[in-house]
Length: 82
Image (cartoon, rainbow, N blue to C red; front, side):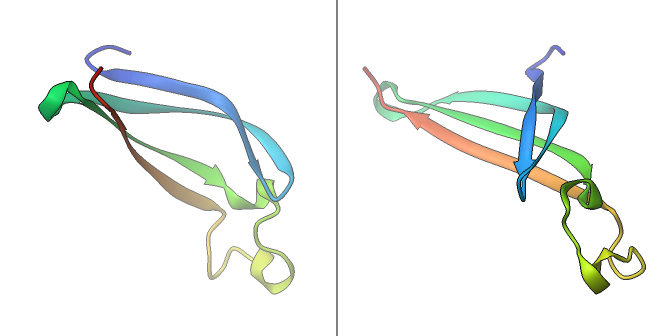
C-alpha cells in the first residue's frame, strides 16, 4: 500500500468457524543496540461476531452488544543481532 503500509490477507478461525479476512496495517522496523532490530505491526479491523458464532442464547441479541466488533492488533517482534 506504500509508506510502510501493507495488507494482511488470510483466514481467521474463531470457535471453529473460518472466514476470509483482509486488513491494512503499518510496519515499522527499528534498529536496536547491538545490531538487533525490532518490528512493530499495528492495524485494526471490524468483524461481525455473529458470523463466528460469538454470542449465543440471550447474548445473540445485538441490543446490548452490537454485531460489529473492532479488533486492534499490535505485535512487537525482536531479532537479535547476527
